[in-house]
Length: 127
Image (cartoon, rainbow, N blue to C red):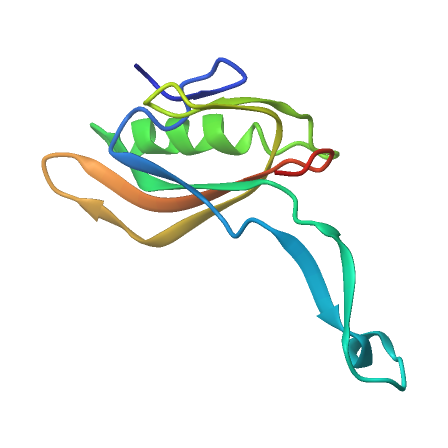
Protein backbone atom coordinates (compact mmCIF):
# COMPACT_ATOMS: atom_id res chain seq x y z
CA UNK A 1 0.00 0.00 0.00
CA UNK A 2 1.28 3.48 -0.84
CA UNK A 3 1.20 6.40 1.56
CA UNK A 4 -0.64 9.57 0.55
CA UNK A 5 -1.85 13.01 1.58
CA UNK A 6 -5.11 14.18 -0.03
CA UNK A 7 -4.69 11.26 -2.43
CA UNK A 8 -1.23 12.46 -3.57
CA UNK A 9 1.83 10.20 -3.34
CA UNK A 10 4.16 12.90 -1.99
CA UNK A 11 6.73 10.65 -0.30
CA UNK A 12 6.65 7.41 -2.28
CA UNK A 13 9.78 8.12 -4.32
CA UNK A 14 11.93 6.80 -1.49
CA UNK A 15 11.91 5.21 1.95
CA UNK A 16 9.87 7.01 4.59
CA UNK A 17 8.49 6.44 8.08
CA UNK A 18 5.48 7.77 9.98
CA UNK A 19 5.58 8.53 13.72
CA UNK A 20 3.13 10.06 16.16
CA UNK A 21 4.43 12.80 18.40
CA UNK A 22 3.61 13.03 22.09
CA UNK A 23 -0.01 12.31 22.97
CA UNK A 24 -1.84 13.22 26.15
CA UNK A 25 -2.73 16.41 27.98
CA UNK A 26 -1.19 19.87 27.78
CA UNK A 27 -0.11 20.90 31.27
CA UNK A 28 1.98 24.02 31.93
CA UNK A 29 3.44 25.54 35.08
CA UNK A 30 1.24 28.34 36.49
CA UNK A 31 4.37 30.50 36.77
CA UNK A 32 4.91 30.36 32.97
CA UNK A 33 1.57 32.14 32.51
CA UNK A 34 2.45 34.98 34.85
CA UNK A 35 0.71 33.59 37.90
CA UNK A 36 2.18 34.27 41.33
CA UNK A 37 1.37 30.75 42.52
CA UNK A 38 3.16 27.47 41.92
CA UNK A 39 1.54 24.38 40.52
CA UNK A 40 0.36 23.26 37.12
CA UNK A 41 -2.52 24.26 34.90
CA UNK A 42 -4.34 21.82 32.61
CA UNK A 43 -5.10 23.43 29.23
CA UNK A 44 -6.63 20.48 27.36
CA UNK A 45 -5.65 17.56 25.16
CA UNK A 46 -2.68 17.81 22.81
CA UNK A 47 -3.40 17.98 19.07
CA UNK A 48 -2.60 14.90 17.02
CA UNK A 49 0.76 15.38 15.26
CA UNK A 50 2.23 12.97 12.68
CA UNK A 51 5.85 13.30 11.53
CA UNK A 52 7.03 11.76 8.26
CA UNK A 53 10.79 11.29 7.83
CA UNK A 54 12.44 9.87 4.76
CA UNK A 55 14.27 10.53 1.51
CA UNK A 56 13.04 11.90 -1.78
CA UNK A 57 14.72 9.92 -4.57
CA UNK A 58 15.02 10.94 -8.23
CA UNK A 59 17.10 10.24 -11.33
CA UNK A 60 18.34 13.84 -11.74
CA UNK A 61 18.54 17.20 -10.00
CA UNK A 62 15.64 18.49 -12.08
CA UNK A 63 13.50 15.47 -11.15
CA UNK A 64 14.35 15.94 -7.46
CA UNK A 65 13.30 19.61 -7.65
CA UNK A 66 10.03 18.50 -9.24
CA UNK A 67 9.41 16.17 -6.27
CA UNK A 68 10.27 18.95 -3.79
CA UNK A 69 7.98 21.37 -5.61
CA UNK A 70 5.11 18.86 -5.52
CA UNK A 71 5.55 18.44 -1.77
CA UNK A 72 5.88 22.15 -0.95
CA UNK A 73 2.89 22.98 -3.17
CA UNK A 74 0.78 21.33 -0.45
CA UNK A 75 2.01 23.79 2.21
CA UNK A 76 -0.99 26.10 1.95
CA UNK A 77 -1.80 29.36 3.74
CA UNK A 78 -4.03 28.84 5.55
CA UNK A 79 -3.44 25.09 5.88
CA UNK A 80 -6.12 23.01 4.16
CA UNK A 81 -6.85 19.75 6.01
CA UNK A 82 -6.85 16.43 4.22
CA UNK A 83 -6.52 12.71 4.84
CA UNK A 84 -3.04 11.36 5.58
CA UNK A 85 -2.50 7.62 5.02
CA UNK A 86 0.68 5.72 5.93
CA UNK A 87 2.00 2.80 3.89
CA UNK A 88 0.36 0.32 6.29
CA UNK A 89 -3.14 1.75 5.77
CA UNK A 90 -3.38 3.79 9.01
CA UNK A 91 -5.52 6.86 8.29
CA UNK A 92 -5.63 10.28 9.95
CA UNK A 93 -8.39 12.61 8.79
CA UNK A 94 -8.37 16.42 8.87
CA UNK A 95 -4.58 16.67 9.01
CA UNK A 96 -2.89 19.91 7.95
CA UNK A 97 0.57 19.84 6.35
CA UNK A 98 2.46 22.49 8.34
CA UNK A 99 6.21 22.09 7.69
CA UNK A 100 8.66 20.47 5.28
CA UNK A 101 12.30 20.58 6.29
CA UNK A 102 15.13 19.31 4.08
CA UNK A 103 17.70 17.53 6.25
CA UNK A 104 21.25 18.14 5.06
CA UNK A 105 22.60 18.46 1.56
CA UNK A 106 21.39 16.72 -1.58
CA UNK A 107 23.23 13.42 -2.09
CA UNK A 108 24.30 12.64 -5.64
CA UNK A 109 25.30 9.22 -6.96
CA UNK A 110 23.47 6.92 -9.34
CA UNK A 111 20.38 8.64 -7.92
CA UNK A 112 19.82 12.10 -6.44
CA UNK A 113 18.33 12.05 -2.94
CA UNK A 114 17.32 14.43 -0.18
CA UNK A 115 16.45 13.54 3.42
CA UNK A 116 13.48 15.42 4.91
CA UNK A 117 11.09 15.79 7.83
CA UNK A 118 7.43 16.66 7.17
CA UNK A 119 4.97 17.54 9.95
CA UNK A 120 1.18 17.18 9.87
CA UNK A 121 -1.10 18.54 12.60
CA UNK A 122 -4.79 18.09 13.39
CA UNK A 123 -5.92 21.53 14.55
CA UNK A 124 -9.50 20.49 15.31
CA UNK A 125 -9.46 17.17 17.16
CA UNK A 126 -7.61 15.48 19.95
CA UNK A 127 -6.37 11.93 20.52
